[in-house]
Length: 245
Image (cartoon, rainbow, N blue to C red):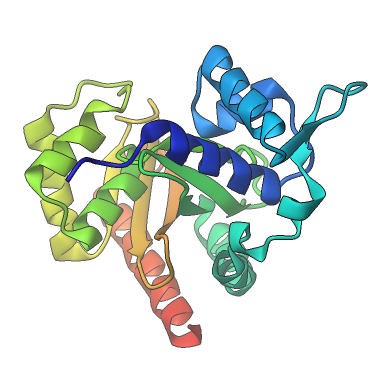
């Protein structure tokens, strides 16, 4: 059997984005979905021509057409319910650990999207950009999800190859980190995805299409024991969310 048609998957990713967002510009859509301006423009034009999306001539912003905007299938009620449950726990963890905490959703075959975040009140702190996207294999969340999903080596290699690592990381080391995540329950990225930043993450596979919870800190701010403690804190938050499911 052949794989999914990439342009169709990308079109649905755009429609889901527009369903959950305010009207967006071409550059906003392209950046969020991970498309070049030309590819994104072609898909948006097609969606407009087919009556699925509209473009405001004055503002040049795109939104779903009324008939598609009313289609609940494009909105992830399970995701919103998880966000509502997770947000107070994320705030507590961020304040207790002085970390930037994020809840990520699998947005497509290739991308993760940040759907909620919390930060500490420290004077010098990390902050996650709203609604950002990253490659599915990138960061600690990507490793945690791969471990939870028990992906095979070919799929793991595909996800690894799509990431622009900021520090050298071999596939063998990446695969070993995924294996360790499967053993400990949490994954760790120490400056490979974002130089100077360490991130610990756990996977929350109970609600489709898949989620991950991360906590990011400045790499030199914690020792190994403190990083392990942060992983244990994330596991406790995951357990609390599972009890509420």
